[in-house]
Length: 511
Image (tube, rainbow, N blue to C red; front, side):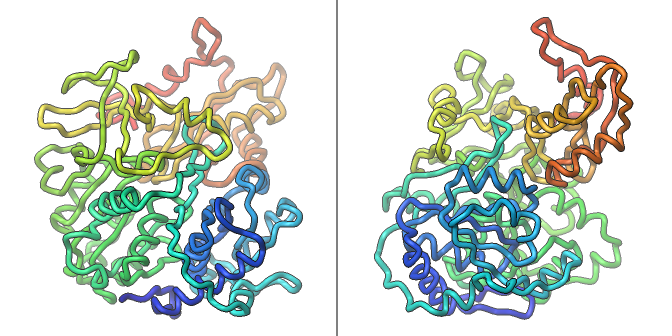
């Protein structure tokens, strides 16, 4: 079985299981059990796995938190989730100390050197008077296995509202767990490429996101060797592939873009022949980028399409994509994927409509604390991830736009309503519109148009200065333009499409 590796530290499978079982006993001593939530305010680190597995052992849901959140955003998630404990890196405490929920245990992980180096910060010890995660769990005897199925992870995802929603699945039956494992195993390449304990992979993306989370935890459970890259660096990834003879990777298109920008001499000096299966998802990949990656790495590049709510519902190999450029693949046999018109009727091949999908074998989900939003997400009996697309005559799905207002920048979901809500609080702002515009590196960049109040003296700099204090940095508009008046529909709603379309004119893609 493979080890879990972070920098110079290495955790063998037996040690990981022992530490998770001790942490589970600790969580149980805090009264945490079936159906409760444990918030993980962590970067990619060994304790992320320890805490995730520990929560599952007591029937609780590990709930990763995007550590880029502002204090207000973190406070919302803590309150909405009802987290019964928070596991957090030491250096991340200061910005949110004032919103840590009273009475909720806070278990602190010392920030290790490799993470400190990657982010240009000082390695942070556990602050005096706070609970040290490692020392705390070592004080408990391992919790005996109960045989109960872990309920899985709750991922908070933006989609149809401005605030993130927690996707909460019912604990799966044995049949559902096996069927889900089959789909995930195929999508991630964990089946059909030799024994799982011969898989070597690098976790390239932050595990507060749905796909890297599922990928990393599944790989570790299967006994693969899992290497944690604290922060994606293109040349470092190439070096890790060569050093550890990496076989599998999960990536997003912006990583391809950054790899391709490396000097030819750098790209040529690393041996990448160990790679067997590389899969990407989360955002559209520009065809020239994907073709260049296949030319470089060979026909090991695969792709799936899906969402946190529906899982991976289509898949395509390099060969599929080269014969059907631009596709995101064909549906799995276990999934229902349709393209529908506004009345819910299934459209024939070649006709564009909204994509709706469901993975039949998976346990159903709801949005934590908001069953109505779950009901609202259904269309024609399936779930609408928010994309516009079509099937070709061969049954391959293509995406061409988004039905929802969401921006995907570098594989990260950004909901304009959150940014617009803060812009409208900005002194001197009468109205605004936020949307995505093309970006060669990130796929989309956040763009804002602001209508000043009468007599207000606004500048792009002043608007950005206000926003920086209220939203996470990755949500910041790349550009803020001022307009005397915004175009509106007859209803008075801002005609955002008229603002957005000129930026996409002449491009084959709309997302």
